[in-house]
Every structure is written in structure tokens, then in C-alpha cells.
Length: 265
Image: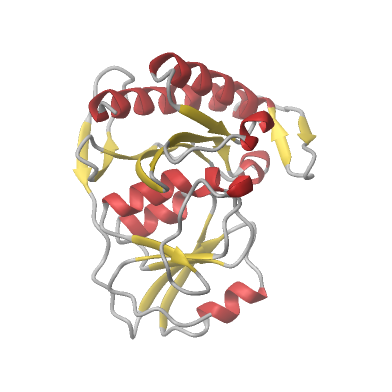
């Protein structure tokens, strides 16, 4: 893989998809449909998916593409692939809360090594550079010219006063029970893959997910966090979270700064 080309293409497609999403977000009303699993989907999901899929298939025709909105892709498997969630946090989008993202990632041998997470309503963009390190880009976010970038890295946490981030739409008692095992200074909620990014920037130390997710929900955030020095492990045995699983469904997991002393499930 040409990582320079990959970075350029993923960044541009994320920004273009963000524009398409925000056009619909700005409308007075938009249709919301239900998929076979009863999860919501909007015209924004579909428009962003069409744009990203076409761009990735043109740029990388020999790489398997897995995308949430194309069910036929979910039966295909490979060790190395591109994986997309064109609009992560559809519920946040529908309720106009702003915590939704465009997620594009590249998985190599079961590990997300490159990715971009773009939150168009918040104007925040995080991505891995060709060397695998993660930056946050600020400024105009021009599609052809990269603006100012700031390298990001995870925190050096105080295990007696941890900063925790948890799901805004899916927080439950099991999550609160697990968080209760730690000495917590403060806790905040965020939607979509932004939770990974908050750990990557050091704004949070740990993000436990005790609930169902799919690989397209997590791969880009996982890559961003890994490029900032963080880790994503299974909740049950703390082994690395791997990708390319049958059905692309994740087990429960913990995203964290390596300095966090993890508690048993």
C-alpha cells in the first residue's frame, strides 16, 4: 500500500462526505428509515456511502472494501481491507446533537493501521499520517491543501483520578458498573467514534464499551488511537481487539491509554 496516497484519498473523501452529510443535516426535515436490524439510516448515510465507496474503489481497486451500508460486503473476508462507516452516530445526527463522524480505515493483518475520523458538525478531523502517527488538523479543512496539523498523544494518566468517556446513546448499568471499578476524577459522554479520539488526544484516559458494536464503528477510531500511542483490547481477557472476524461484530472492549491499570471484567 502507498500510505501517502492512502492518507490523501481518505482525508479528501472524508471531507467530501462531510459536506454531503451537512447539506442534509441543514434541511428542515429528512426521512429516517429502518434497516433489517432496526437501526436507523438516512439519506445522509446513503449519500456519504456512495461517495466514499466510489472514491475508494477507484483509488484502490484491488483492496476489499467493507462498508456498513452495503450488506453484500459483509459476507466477504480478507486479512487486509478497507472498512467504512459513512455516518457513525446516526442517532446523534437524527437528534441534531452533532456527535457524528465519518469513519474510514485500512486494516492490515487484522489490525487497523491507518484511519480518519471526521466530525463535520464539530469541525474536528483526526487521521493517521503516512508514517502511522496521528494528528488533528485544524483550520479551513480544504480538500486539496492540508492545513495546520498537531501531533496528538495519549495521556499519562493518574490511576487515582481517571478521566472516563462513555457512549452518549448506549450507556447502561453494565457500563456504569464497570466504570465503578476505577477511581474516577470525571466522566463525560460523547457519540460515535469521537470517544476514541478523546482518548487519543489525552482528553480522556479510558473508554469502556460494554455493548454491541461492529468493526466499521470502531476501526477508524482504533487506528487514530493506536497512532497516538493508545490501545484497544477485549473487555474479557484484555487481548488485542482484532478485525476481519466472521460477521464483523466486535466483543466488548476497552480503549485506553497504556498507563491505565485495567480492571477485570
